[in-house]
Length: 114
Length: 109
Image 1 (cartoon, rainbow over the protein chains, first blue to last red):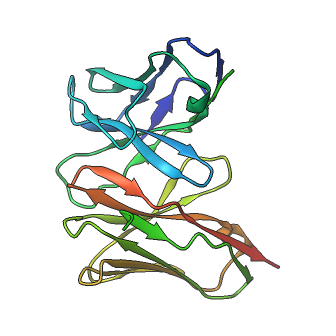
Image 2 (cartoon, chains in turn green, red):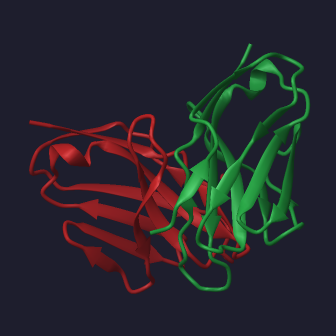
Image 3 (cartoon, chains in turn yellow, cyan):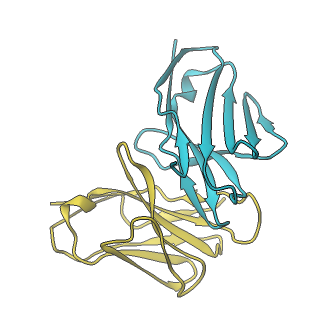
């Protein structure tokens, strides 16, 4: 079974802080993703990565950056946290190159910016 | 046109009912299709992949119409435990999965 682990279930930070959300997967998947989920807006793609040191912007990358130094780890960084970044953040991984491969999600991090 | 569109519901049905969810997608290049299920305050979990020929998994049947860019999910003999939000998902350029906003189902006794 694929295991995607996010470092925190709940996190409270202050406006202006630099925030790191960590995600680790244990299935050697090439693709990793960060989404945020907000009521009425569904899941929106922030960034994704094809492989180590590779990254691609998703639909809402503003205010975020990512880091993929090792294949199993994909970090989301809020450079200067703002209250509109309060959200549920979901990390996922996926096997590349095989049709109909689903994404596997971590439990999510509920981030509150005060 | 939104990339993935679903009727948000909610669908309120009694136990034993048959319920159908529909989804349309705008990118004709999409290659992979899925239905995910999400329980309240939990992460989305794969319910089933959707194949061109249609596929069934127990009480759940998924259909894909590529010409109309339309996906459906049929749930037969609904159970209380089927209450959740159902997310229609398609791939964008073979990589990222793009999610619809979800359809909420509530099954009552």
